Image (tube, rainbow, N blue to C red):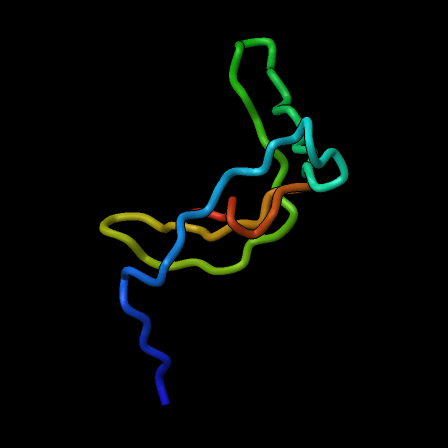
Amino acid sequence: MYLIYHASELKGSLANKACLFLSHEYAQPHPVVTDNGLKEYLVQEMLDACHHKKGWQYLVQWVSYRPEHNCW
């Protein structure tokens, strides 16, 4: 069984205001900047991998980032 909602019943979401809800703000680490000026981030684990065109793509979990920041 699928729940069906009409678009008129949906409400938009509002971004969290850190000044109002400090305890809900998720601190994210700054990248490590190398001597060459390159930004590097730390990977906690590789979640998945897939062959794409002539190479590979990896789904990674970044250190101290939430799951919505995972990207291919």
